[in-house]
Amino acid sequence: MEKVILPAYCDLEVFWPELGHGLGRVEEISFNPQNEENLTLFNMKHVTVLKIARVSGKDLWDDATFCEAMKFVGKYAENLYWLQISIHENHDWSRDVLENGFFPMIQNISHQLTKVTLDLEGIDDHLKCAIYKTLSDQCPSLDLFELKDDFIHSIPVVNGFTQLKKLNCTSVLPMYLAEFVSTSNNITQLSLNQLWAQSLMFSAHAISQKYQKLQDFQMTLGMTIEEKEIVLKLAKRWAKDIDQHFQQRTKVKLEIGIVPKWDQDNRKYDRITISKMPFQKTSVQTIQNQDPWPLEFLSSSDHLDNMGY
Image 1 (cartoon, rainbow, N blue to C red):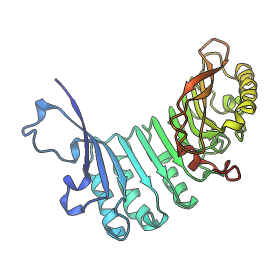
Image 2: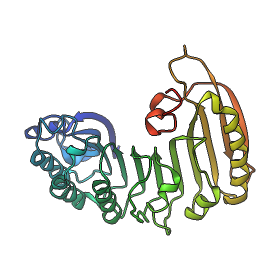
Image 3: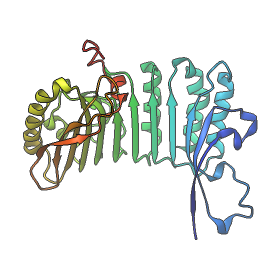
Image 4: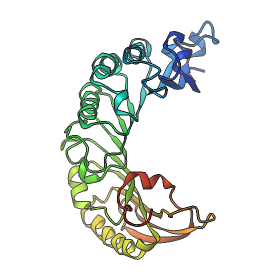
């Protein structure tokens, strides 16, 4: 046995009690039993997946303490490959936190990171742009980038991330990614989630031109019951667009599900799928008796503001 990987789900303070609770959570650890003298003592060198979040809020831990937590991660997490960051309050991430905590942490672990997940809510564009640019410029081994952004109108211009192979976005319209990743990107897998079908300006031509190495493209889309017939017509148009512009080798799957206005006694609904296997034509199907999409779709768009939701 060379390597053991275990889920952890413990607070960062387990590895440094002086930090206090609520500044980060260890999701996974790994170790080689042959190289460990005491398997009951784990430290930051064993941490492989970590989530940074200020769940206790600024009222409990000040900026200096939060910065110390990130510096601690950067100094000792020598095997960390997947960094997850959750930012839900603008006052939790100031310029001081970026310069004295986030930047030093990334500088120390940048070359070992292969996956980064960002969950952003209520953060202004200047802070977002600084975070994106740092990850783009300093993490040459970054393979997967997962992004959830609640700002539906645009995301900051970065024109970077040439190293990425996989991009997974939630609540980000494809048109806003045009200046997020470089035109010379190497993305082979693109996933866009929690978007609204009827208001989506979908262009297979634009996507195929932007992501010329694309091999796998997926989207999850929502619709209301009243929009079903309109969306079905859109789906047929999109299928023709995909056949015309996507490379034959590219695999495509778009799922369009109902988002109900309220809990309707566990009712089942139709779901529209647009699928294409490599070197085959695109098909459109209506699948019956499917679960509705969760209500999280409602938080990702203002599409339903005037529809009684």
